[in-house]
Image 1 (tube, rainbow, N blue to C red):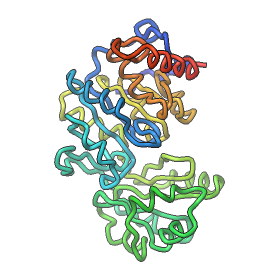
Image 2: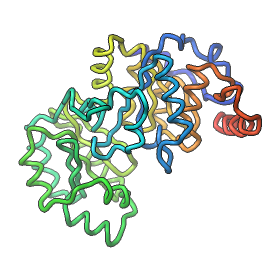
Image 3: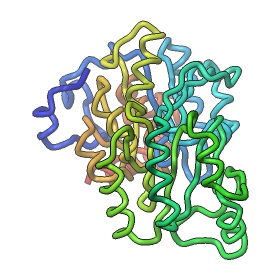
Image 4: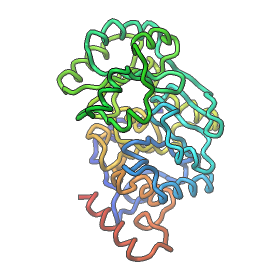
Length: 328
């Protein structure tokens, strides 16, 4: 169910200290039964999943609210600490190409690129010369020449440490893409130049049997024609017996926008791109300020300033001050 877009033309409220959520939003938060979470730039800080956020998510699960991870990462690149969230049932990966059982890692649902879309990409990408990653079988692959160059020289437009930690180098990335063309989850292209990135985005978006999105300022991602976090989340909700109107979704990047728009209540991070903020119902603190935990505690748990009453006053004051800054 897609909400009335006219509602979204209003100023998007900032979720900050002192905000009365019942007065600020015409929404009954008691109806929400699912929390959908992007990872990078949303649930995770630079240090990973914080203790406070993990405890908040586990408390939500104890209260009968389902927590669903919805990430652009492949399954193999998931942080172990995320998979250790007690009570977690479903994980959406590769921008919606897979739904996995959180306990076993079994793929429960798949939505791949059409082989014709893969062939079309193969007609374009080798000549373009940009670094390409291929997601298939829950793993991410990159050409060995790119991998080795990142190891030696780093990069100012790719996250070298993350790539080296989570990607598998292969000799001939396009040979692998062609070989696995029937089960490609995602094709991730990196760009040093924004002009090149936007030109490639426009070219790919005009082609059939694929969707085009992004999770960073330097990449373009090709997914299946019906692949998105929103569509996979709808399948999770079907399994749980809820509609998307019972979901609160959190994100920061274009690949989160459909999920934020189509769910019952959408929350953009303080560090989100402008288009994601405009699509959301409210903006919380940044990921580095644990904005997910803050929003859940403020909106769903109805805690004052996102902090339980047992929290020491000094910590309450620090969070209140962060909230004031985010609201300016």
